[in-house]
Amino acid sequence: MAQQVRGVIAPGKDQPVRVETIVVPDPGPGEAVVRVQACGVCHTDLHYKQGGISDDFPFLLGHEAAGVVESVGEGVTDVAPGDFVILNWRAVCGHCRACLRGRPWYCFDTHNARQKMTLLDGTELSPALGIGAFAEKTLVAAGQCTKVDPSVSPQVAGLLGCGVMAGIGAAINTGNVGRGDTVAVIGCGGVGDAAIAGSRLAGAARIIAVDIDDRKLEKARAMGATHTVNSRGTDPVEAIRELTGGFGADVVIEAVGRPETYKQAFYARDLAGTVVLVGVPTPEMKLELPLLDVFGRGGALKSSWYGDCLPSRDFPMLIDLHLQGRLDLGAFVTETIALDEVEKAFERMHEGDVLRSVVVF
Ligand code: APR
Ligand code: ZN
Ligand code: ZN
Image (cartoon, rainbow, N blue to C red; front, side, top):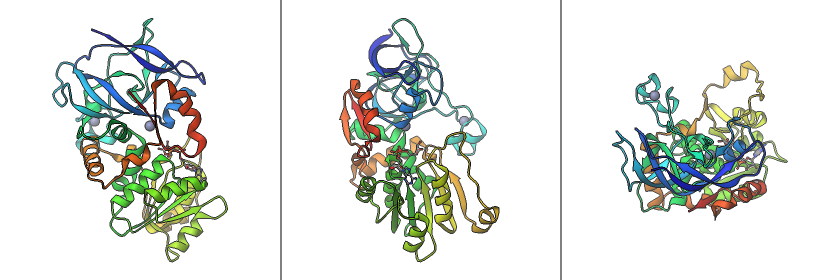
């Protein structure tokens, strides 16, 4: 039987979000209903509300979530009711060229639940990133659920569903940061700080944090940065070169998503070093570089999509490291809030001292 729960809706472009009654259908073939226990507030939810991602209003927001599987539909074997899971954006197909080559993060046939959650009047909802977890329960494709050790707190686990995984993965998967490397991270919000934590985990010897806000740099130090550069008054490329004997960093991770910081990342790397682009630009942004520099500096320019993560490999591993005290995922949770405080959390997002507000149920 379909159930009624409370959820946070973005009703229309730039309109305030509100809590509404949501109808959650029983899971169909390949689907699961998850009782959400915690869901982080991400910039992408704000972009949905602002109409910056799609026009398919109303949206059911929320996508950095963990919870317990309540029921599963026909043919679901990987998860069962009672399993504690972290949700990911899309279930991969397992059969396409990308999947068969072991690069499922570029799967051509990802999918979410086929059925729709609705408002009481039958209006179909568009779940943010195919999840919609600012709701007491949500309907997803079973492949969007990854089982992890249930002794971790849900508010911490959910963060791996998006921004924190993107940052850690940019370092350990895309950047392949190694023991003894020097890493520079440009932009120290939640994603950049996660890249710092990931670099520390990978054994980086020096981690240089760059931001335009001293409060962010202070947090970055707590996450593992060994050096900080405020790039408001200083050229960060020069500063990074100075800190590396004139060479540049082995790996530079860009976590802002702007042309000037892309350019800084490009020039701050050592010859044959790696640039990892995890900050997402807007469609009109362009970057102009002398081709001779592109040709002459060698190395690699890589973009990182969701931290190039494999949820079934990376989520349980990172939760284990957290439980062992080797990765402080709790440091990313600035505050826990109630479901009706999401609008307020959006307003606080730009105040500089919030990494993540997390809705707990
Ligand atoms: N130079 C350095 N740092 C900058 C600059 C700049 N020119 N402009 C902004 N910043 C810093 C901000 O001060 C902030 O600390 O970048 C950080 C951005 O952090 P958040 O806004 O919290 O964003 P976050 O969630 O970390 O995401 C960063 O990664 O995955 C992408 O879509 C995401 O593009 C976004 C980026
Ligand atoms: Zn595929
Ligand atoms: Zn997100």
